[in-house]
Image (cartoon, rainbow, N blue to C red; front, side, top):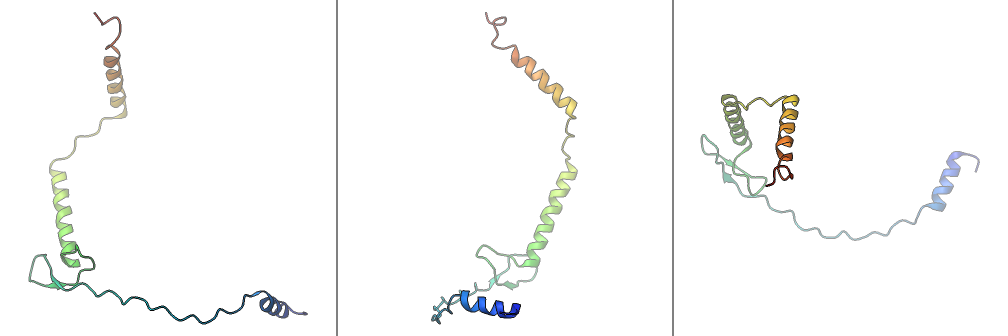
Length: 113
């Protein structure tokens, strides 16, 4: 072996496992048939769709339109009735301190009669 090519060829011949014998291909099950066409539950003219899952009842465009309407309604309700502002960390710490003072007064000998 005088060249890298000769060395590589020798190693491949000596070290590679023997070729696998031809194995007959196993018969795979036939592909599942697509779901039947169904009428879309969305608005507008009646149109058909082939669902990609058994629970789908609307086509893509109708589903997107329903989702846009849902989120627009949710945003409008959130803007109409905003959540109260969260208290600052100082207010929260003060409230916890007051709660601890009230809770520590119960069950002590000084208050038990």
